[in-house]
Image (cartoon, rainbow, N blue to C red; front, side, top):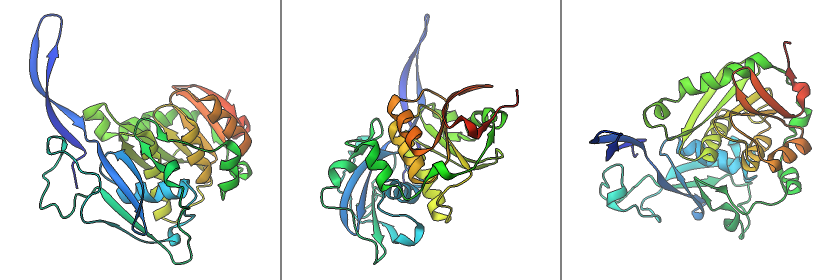
Amino acid sequence: MGRVTARRRASHLTADTITTRPETLVVEEPLELRINGAAITVTMRTPGSDVELAQGFLLTEGVVGQRDDIARVEYCRGAAVPIPESLRSSPPGDGTNTYNVLDVTLADDVPPPGLDVTRNFYTTSSCGVCGKGSIDAVRTISRHSPGDDPTVVASETLSAMPDQLRSAQRVFASTGGLHGAALFAADGTMLVVREDIGRHNAVDKVIGWAVEHGRIPLSGTVLLVSGRASFELTQKAIMAGIPVLAAVSAPSSLAVDLASQAGLTLVAFLRGESMNVYTRPDRVKHAG
C-alpha cells in the first residue's frame, strides 16, 4: 500500500531569501474499481481505506444497498492504470500488485450496473462524479428518505463540529492538502473521520465505513464536510439516509434544491457560532 504522504523538494521564496527544502505532500494515485471483474471507473484518491471508498461509492450510486450485497472485495494483480516511476509514492515491487485496482464481487442476487453506466462513473478528485442525472433521478434511485427522519440537532452542537474535524485531520495538519469528512451523532459524538485528496472520496470513505458496520441508513446523524456542499455530496448524503449535511463553506444552488426536495437539512458557512440553514431549519434547535 502506498503511503499517504510523500516528500518532494521545493524552493521556498521570501522577500529576502530563497531556500531549498523538502516538503511533505499528500499522495494522489489512481484507483480502478471493478465489479465482478469488469472495470467501471477510475478515481484519483489518497491511498488508504480503499475498501470503504469502494463500498461507499457503490452505495451512493445505487449499485448496492447494504453490506450483504457485497460478497468479496479484493485487490487485483496488475494495474490497468500504470503509474510512472517518477510519480510513485512507494516502490513498484515485482509488478504483481500495485494496490491500485480493486475488484468488488457482488452477491449472487445483486445485479451488476447497466452496460452504459461507465460513462456516468468516471471520476476525478477535482470534479467528482460527472454526467449526473437530474434531481428527480436521485430521488428515484434512493432507497432512503431523509425527510422522514425526526432528528433534531442543537446549534451549539453543530458549531463545535468543525474544530473536532480539524483536530482529527492528522494528514491535513502535515500537508494542508486534504479534504475531510466526519460523521457525528446528533449529540455531537464523532463516529468516524476520513481524509482524501478528493472531497467526494472522503465522503465515500465515511459512508463505506457505515456500510461495513451495518449502519445504513444513517438515521440520526450529521455529515460534516470541510469544504463546500455540492450537488454530488448532497446526493451521497441522501443515498445513505443522512438527515443533516453541514459544510464549512458555501453550498451550490443545485445542492440546496436537491436537499429541499429530499427533506435533507443543509447547513453551510458553519464557522464558529455562525451558520446558514438553507433547508429543513426545524431540525436545528437554536439556543437563543
